[in-house]
Length: 243
Image (cartoon, rainbow, N blue to C red; front, top):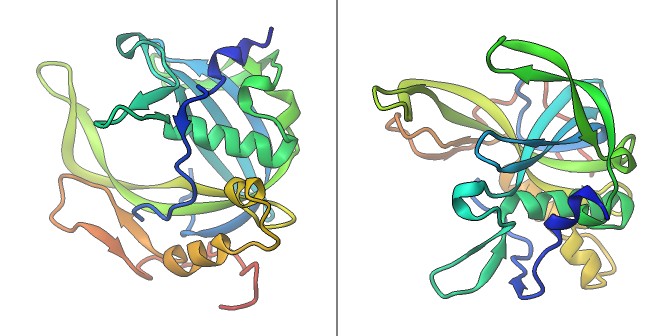
């Protein structure tokens, strides 16, 4: 049995479909053609599972992303949540992990096997990366996928007197993978499942998000998305020639 078998999604989970949402080097928001350089499982101190990925762009820059695929001990180690109407939804991180695996291998994440390998992983106590044995999803390595990447502003959090993380008043920039598309067809998993004949959502995503900056910081007065605020040399070339 695969180590990831616990991530098999419930049969009564509601499909959230395609949506735009809110919208080391931080890249500008845009579409990036990437290769999966590394993909491994980690488990937090609280028991939550994460799929950690390192993607490499065509010009060699790294995009690191953590997809939380299963909740911690306090929330029952579930890969879904229940909304106010009682409907089940996959955790957003599980949806992303399944999209990545389906778009590259044709399988869900729970259907993939893992192999123990030594990987440099950040150690919070030593404040550096150290060689650590982890479970690597080898089938994902060297696979290609197009990422819809967002640039966003978030709070720098610090611990208060009660040991809880709170906004410090300072912010930082980071990237977040918002959507994934098939490397060749440009389709989403929803479009593939619905047997669409051409990719459409990728154009909608690009029009809304290309070059924007999303402000998620709670400690700042500016809210929402600022269009065109951070277009720089790191902007990716257009996949469609429609810039």
